[in-house]
Structure formats: structure tokens, C-alpha cells
Amino acid sequence: MKMKKLIAILLAVVLCFAAVSCTSKGDGNTTTAAASTSDAPADSSAPADDTSDSGTDTTADNLYTYDHITVALPEGFTLNENAGTPLALCPDYPSRTDNIAFSKGGADNIANYTRELLDSIYSQTFAGFGESTVFEKTVIDGKDAIKYGCTFTQNNVAMTLIQIMIFGSTYSDVLTFTSVSGYYDAAFEAVIASISVAD
Image (cartoon, rainbow, N blue to C red):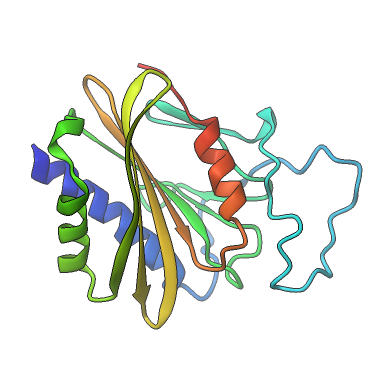
């Protein structure tokens, strides 16, 4: 059972890497999170490294439900559900490739996971694995959860990965946040804070 869960997690990571490697948007079934409720117009002339407004608006209009979890997606993120595993792409994709992937698995137990185990799996799977940055066992909306983060390099692109693994009695859900530009890091933390879980 433990290996099935780890394979599901790795699959989610591979999907994130695929999005990073893509050079154009797909023509698939996509939806976009609602626009900001602010009266201020969006500044499309902001330079690429400007982090003054990184889509941290996570209003109720941006809610997305996948399996047992509901999150408030950052403003403007486009959801592609055609790959079998939903992938939320940032509004300026492909110039920025930051994304959120959603995956699910069967019942699992938080006790099966340690920082060393996840580090070992990622370092054996990806030659560009750097180091783990966070491993925290916690509770999200009454369910056991793990927040795991690491750095790595793929195709000469440095990135940071944060995974939230939620363990229900009959399921496990995983959200994978891939940060390449760093521009959406605050928005990703807002998404993590917005997670609600239903059985």
C-alpha cells in the first residue's frame, strides 16, 4: 500500500515537470479562476520579476473541488483537466510555469512517511534533487496531513516543490505546488491555508 501511494505522489510530480517543459498551452478543456473582486485594473505592463501582485486573491468565486478537497485557486489560474490529473496553470503560462497539480490515491497512513523516506525517493528518481526544505506532520480540517518541500533542478531549471498530502480513512489526496519563478509563492501559501476536506 505504501508503494502505491508513493508512486501516485511521483506521478503528480512528473505531471508538474511536464508542465514546466511545455512551451505552449494545450487546446484542452480549461477553465479560469474568477477575476479579482478589486476595482483596480490589472497591470499587464508589470515587469516579469515584479512580485507586487501575484494572484493572492482567493475569493469564493475561485473555489475548486477535487476528490475530497476544496481549495481557493489564485486569481486567473487556468485549470486543465484533460491529462487525467488536474493541473492549474498560472495566468502567464507559458512565460511562467508555476502550477498546482491534484492527485488522489487509496487509503494510506501518515505513519508510513518520514522525511528520510521522501528524500530517498526523490533523490533516486530525479538526478537534480537538491534538498528537502520542509517536512511537517500536521492536521488540515481534521485530517492527518504532511507538508513536504524540496528543491531540485530539471532541464537546467531550478524549482521548488511543496506537496500537501491529506490522509482520509478511505483515501489520500495530494496537492503539488511547483514554483519556478517564485512569483506565486504567497498565492500558493494562501491556497494551502484555504484547504477544506470533506469525507
